[in-house]
Length: 308
Image (cartoon, rainbow, N blue to C red; front, side, top):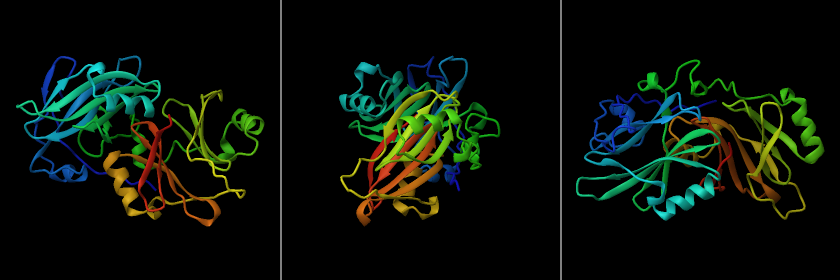
């Protein structure tokens, strides 16, 4: 079951291709929307950033960027980003392509944070950092006609937010070329979940003394394999079980909602080697990028892995 963050911000579209210094002090009148985004409606505002939705550059999506009233957004080159942000991007989004960068600052020049827009695996990703360059959240994307309401429409780029899980592939429906690949290359893997991504590629979650994500093209050609949890030295295979979204600890659900607005829940697994709970692995879709988010047994964030 999917949990959606309901919001309906009335935003002003600002084309940052034409404006170098853009105010992000356009007031949002929907108080409930601000509350859902974790923003104090008495002091915060929101604006949007138009970005190319794909490599063709012929279409656009809009990133919803909250910021404090009276702050402004000023363009920033990739080389001018704080080193901590550059390091974060390199470590977490290998092979990314820089699109846009901005300082968020007030009229006195005090920096309140940074926004960076990148392309990762051909898809735009907007990231918000604090003034010290620490990651805060992935900015929600919407199509132009979906700025109000729930932020999606049937048939649109983000229609998977309706909770129907049309991207889920039954294990029995995984293409034979992919199951054959596993049988030859990873014969000890047990396939757990499979998803068809927005670009028609296929993501398979499997276990083999640990959890792995393996990506294939739409025709079944291997792309990459990512370890989602560390292997254990235990002689016994860890117990890995499916976990319902509603059964996850409350602090995990709270973190996901605030860090990935309007995310789509895909699956969750508990990881228990030698009877000791190691934690939870949650797979989500945020703006058509799949993330594997790893939490410890207490629900504290351990690591985030952008998979595809």
